Structure formats: structure tokens, C-alpha cells
Length: 144
Ligand code: ZN
Image (cartoon, rainbow, N blue to C red; front, side, top):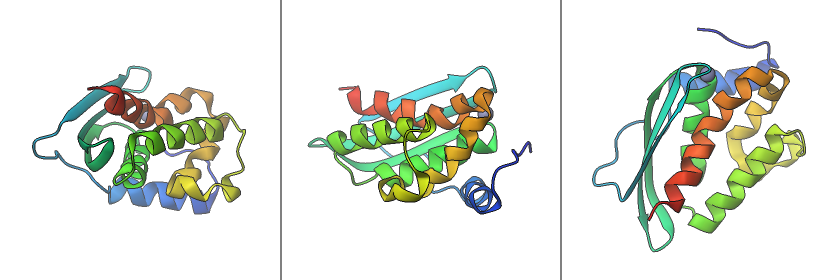
């Protein structure tokens, strides 16, 4: 597995999500699905959501690829389940801002474990890996 020279504490959280992914697996009878592929790295993320009355009642993902893309999908799913579509859109914007370096990771509790991905922005080729799941959930909630 290729790992990046990130700060140890962040690296540990990323590896934990990679080894013990949250919400990994197909959700039964999804109302919405979205699959995205990152050809630069070979990452795949497919999302399954049960969206009812503008709220994500359940979310699951399947995928393969590098540790950044897969741990990011786990972090995103953990954060977005139980949230409304509006809340999810807001969280995705916050995450994009984090990855642009516009947010302080130590002061972004709304992003949960996903703040640990902020160090990836130093490696521009890998930002796509971190963003993949977030772009997928954005499409997931827009699908009617
Ligand atoms: Zn990747």
C-alpha cells in the first residue's frame, strides 16, 4: 500500500478507516446510487443511499483503490448518514474548503474524522483520491 508522509496522528485515523471501513457494503433497496471512478489512481467508489423526505436514512459504499480514496469514503459515509440533503451539501462545501486550505482542520468539528485528510492537499495528484467520495455523495443527493 502506498502511504503518504502525513502527520502521524492523521495518518493513523486514515489507516483505521481504511482497515475498518464504516458503512462498507451494499444497502438494500437503495433509492439513489452513484458510482465514480478516478482514472488517475484507479480508485472506484460506489454509493448506495436510502433517501427519504430529503434525509439520508442510510448510506453504504463499495469500492476499491488507494487508502486515501477508501478511507475518505468511510469518513464521508459516517458523517452523512442521518443528515438532510441540505446538510450534506453544506458538509461537502466545507470539505472542499478544507482541501483548498481555506479551513483550519483543528477548528472544523463538523467534518469529523475527515479533517485528517487535509494533509493530502500537499500532494496535488492525490487530491482527486480524497475528493472522489464527496463528489459522489453530491451527485447521490441530487439524483431524484
Ligand atoms: Zn487514489
